[in-house]
Image 1 (cartoon, one colour):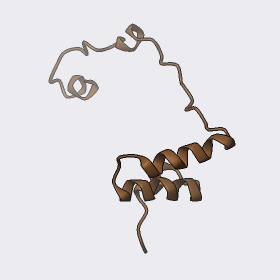
Image 2 (cartoon, helix red, strand yellow):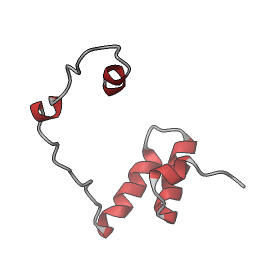
Image 3 (cartoon, rainbow, N blue to C red):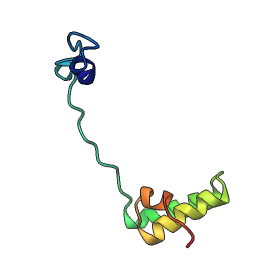
Image 4 (cartoon, rainbow, N blue to C red):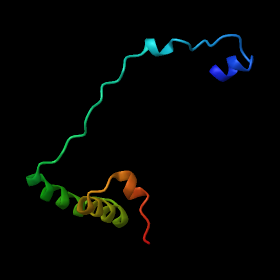
Amino acid sequence: MTLAVNTSTIHHNPLAGIKAAFETPKSQHMLTLKPEELSELMNALSYASIKVTTRCLLEWQLHTMVRPSETAAAKWD
């Protein structure tokens, strides 16, 4: 909208001040597993109705402790 105002496509920005109409979202941290719950997770993964590739990916993430984005971008080489 700022670009449209700056290039004279529109005369004013109807969205100016819209940020004040919304509350700032509260950040929520993801829950963590307790060490004693890990075996239950691994067991659930082995019986889950998911593709083998997905199961291996999750197990690899748990073994290497990489972030999901790093896992998604991982290459064999």
